[in-house]
Image 1: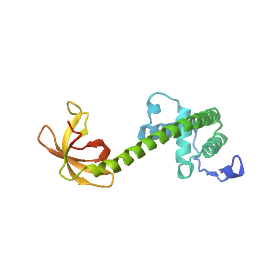
Image 2 (image 1 turned 90 degrees about the vertical axis):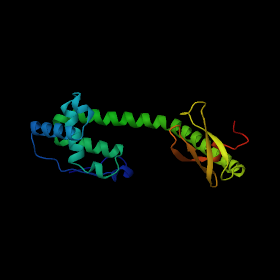
Image 3 (image 1 turned 60 degrees about the vertical axis):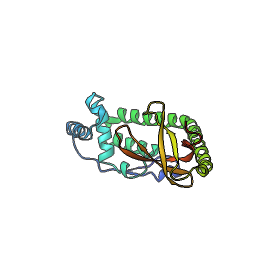
Length: 196
């Protein structure tokens, strides 16, 4: 069975199905085993057999997982399940509505995520630019300090062992006496004259 939905762009979201010819009791039992095998959290908290069956049929008896998992394909899959198993129609409609709600929430949050990602990218670029300048002040063998919240005072002494374009490799000693190395942006390593 094929189910087509929406505009011309969405029509390429054809869903292929191969639903089993089983009664409700067999489908519920198979869906419960499937949920337990995959350790779905809602299987144990009594989410309801209909949700388990809808998800089981969508993932095991359609090609939903083998294409883009778009809203259009999700809707087409749920509609195909409802058409084949009328006793699941209400749950299929609820799953479609839930997906639409989640997509709308994601769309509203997307600008904030993009803005935050932009701020983080600018911060990384600023650290890299500052590091390209700071690396000029360092030499292999220099004793310096870097920020380390795991040590009292928040700073740890280290020796510069390698210098790249914007990063340096430093070697330091733990309280246990073990030697460690770490690669950091040069702007995060303070040269000897700035160390205190």
